Length: 225
Image 1 (cartoon, rainbow, N blue to C red):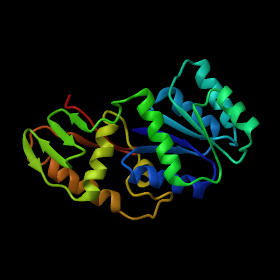
Image 2 (cartoon, rainbow, N blue to C red):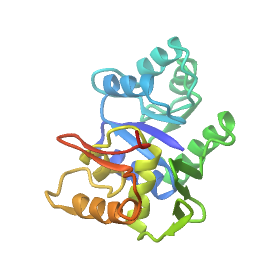
Image 3 (cartoon, rainbow, N blue to C red):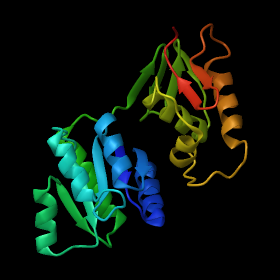
Image 4 (cartoon, rainbow, N blue to C red):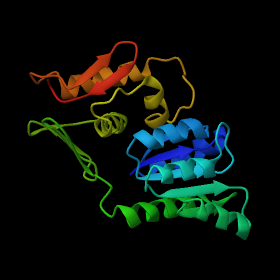
């Protein structure tokens, strides 16, 4: 699933995002309600995980605005406010589930996956395709034009992220956070090295390149023009 996590506590966000990613999900993060609302309004997420107390716009306001836009994406609200009245307020604001802090990650994961199954029983797309490049996420296999391509685990994870965002510019920050689980730029060439290795495997032996560098912005995997 593709999940948006809106959480202003950096350590909590890093902990939750890493756990969700390790469970096989694609996770975007932001630390304020205004940016979270903008992302959720324009991007196709399967589940939103929203902290209640946020800068710029509180979590309940984010949910209320989304419901006014007729966005029916499932929402799990996180909050240190865990009394019965607080939970009722959160659910009536448009939340689908409410998890008080502190929480066990296993419970959060179970609730997120339950929300995803409830609304999108087949949402977890495990067969990805961009032009003649195909990925079977469960079998961990990649083929291009029918030819098997062997990838290292990090290369596979990088390609999966690019394929799930095909046709979109993927920035260095997005890759650091979602493929390497870094929430800071270590100022190394690790991304350049892995992009170069990946490009050599999926493009070099084929007439039409799929992986492109967008100067000054990042990278894009897209269908040939």
